[in-house]
Each structure stands twice: as structure tokens, then as C-alpha cells.
Length: 262
Image (cartoon, rainbow, N blue to C red; front, side, top):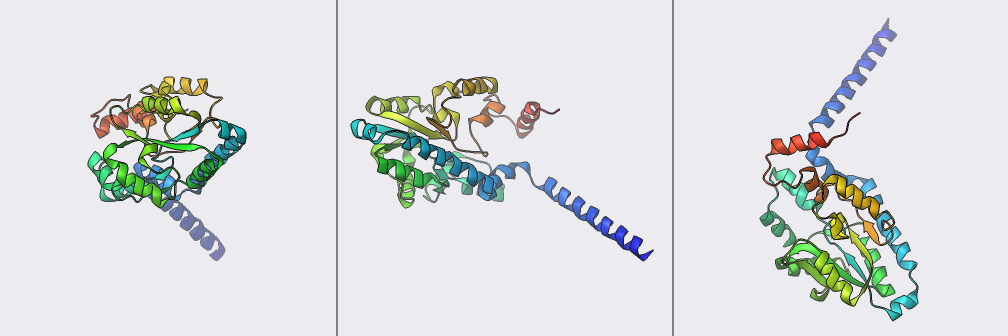
């Protein structure tokens, strides 16, 4: 009888603990998951290292004589491609605030972003091999100085205004990429957002983004190197059909509508 009672108590304790754990998981707001993944998941680090390892392999496939004879360049995005800004997103969540341009500029003024795992080593290796690095970012031109301070802290190559292409007239990066391509042979592009690679992805709905991704399937992992960003990006805008001014309820409705169950 005592054994049966002990077993029953043990099972009840397990079920109680399991229920508590399940409740604790459900209590955690979904909006925290992407930031926690970027900051706490070893899988995120592994994906970053994987991307830069592949990039390095592609770099070494290019003969050294080509570097000597031509002006070869790598174009890279900054935020969530080379530098990690998850601290800003985490602070917003901690303080229960929403993102604003003013908040973002207060963050970049700190020059405190850390490097995405593997980014510094790859760009240093690319520079040593003979590539010129261009940083094409949609940060505002008012953020150039604070960004340069940040990049220099991380010992990234080509950290000067001559190699920075920030937002001026349009958020599209295509005109800036084309200007670089006039003087350089662009051998590789790095980004966390598909519009970091080609204008074919700009302002496209989800189906068209899939279609364009499939069209470029031979470039992924070769000329196009993608870094993971679960927190924000044009993929999110596509979920909301690029509509601005939606209420939290409307945004939730659109997210629910896009979910594919069984």
C-alpha cells in the first residue's frame, strides 16, 4: 500500500511539474522568442559560423591572380549581418516600449554593437586576400561617425567613409551597389535581408519572394551569403502586406491568417 501511495505521489509530482513548466512556457510572450534565439541559442551562433565558413570557402575558390589583376569587392550589410543589435531589441522588451527612430539612433550613438559570430574573422581574411570591403547599410548618414567608431572597435577592415554607403535618398540599396560595381568586380554579397542582394526582392509579397528565391537558387551559398535574423526584416513587412499603421490586433490577425496548419 505504501509503495502504491509513493508511486502515486511521484506521478502526481511529475504531472504537476510538467504542468507548471508548460504554463511557464505559455506565459512567455512570443515576441521575446526571436531576441532570445539570437542571444541565447547556440544554434544561432552555429548558423552564423556556417554562413561565414561557406563564404570563406567561396573566397578561396577564386585564384589569387584574379585578385592581383582585378579590383574585387565584397558588399556587405551591417545590422544583423556583421554587427549584432539584439541588445536594443531586448531593452525595448524589458522596458515595455515600442521601436522608434529616436530609440534606434540613441542605440547606434552608443557604438556598442558586438560582432556577429564569425564576421570579423571572415572580413579580415577577405581583406588579407585582396578584396575591398564595402558596407552598404540603411543606417542614416547621421549615424556614420558612431558606426565607424563601432566598426573600428571590432577591428573590421576598410572602416572609413570611402567604404560606407548609407541611406540618403532611397532605402533601395540597388543604386549604391551599382555605383560600386562600376569600379569593382563584386564577387560576393552578404546580408540578412533578401533586398541586400538584389532589387528583385524589394516590396514583393510572400509568393513572389519565394519565386525570386527559387530563381536565384544557384547563388545562395555562392555569391549570396545569408545570415539569420529572426527579429525583423522585410519578411515581416510581407506578412503585413506592407501595410503601415496597423493596430496590434490587426497585425495579429494577419499573422494568424498566414499560419499554415494541418
